[in-house]
Length: 289
Image 1 (tube, rainbow, N blue to C red):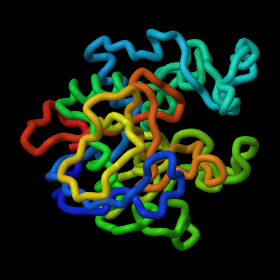
Image 2 (image 1 turned 180 degrees about the horizontal axis):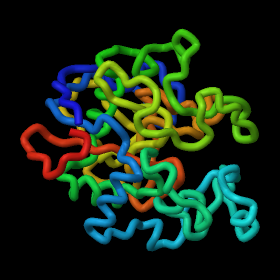
Image 3 (image 1 turned 90 degrees about the vertical axis):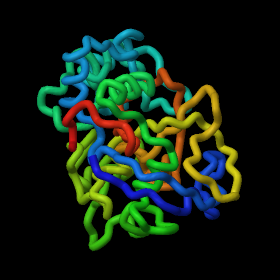
């Protein structure tokens, strides 16, 4: 984990790209010091957790999870008869879960250093509790993403590929039919891929969406806030950072202020997390310290 000193920063934006997501207004927010994982939680990390505790994820209990169509084998695809109407490239795959990311004929043996996927908010919270940690608040997450830069789109500035260098794992080409993989990846990338931001954090945007603590609301006040945590209740949880499937033409959410949401029991092949820890709570393990 990395220690972040906290402080003031401008959260959100007065120039929202996806207004319905509640990206604005910009507000001055103060966060207390906290720790954050340098990396997204990996398959290796989650395997250790599941092996130690016998934990069974919600996708395993439900019996299926959503996978991007192009990643699914033809054999598995033959048995699928439904899709998401608004996003037909998402298919419910039986026996898809964190151990079998594209269905029963896939495994994580060659990607133990990739982020775990198909984890619900409830699964992520269970892991964090086991590790003596918690999910970051949305404010903490965005503070960490911005890494001291004000009013910038990305953790390093406003240029998508500074010096013609890719800094994150997103979709290049024509979504959803052709990914040119100019960043080197079609699906997930190892959690230590690309350059870290100024706080030493890897893959804050792109790769996989990351769960936060907060309940979702698209409405925000412009007044200054200290340690905001979102509404007291709701039906959806905030996720941040975008994923390897994001493209400017469809899901321009790989920006620090961008945000989206899912129900706490949702899982998909591009949804993961990283853990935070309050300064006054001792860690119970050695992951990433």
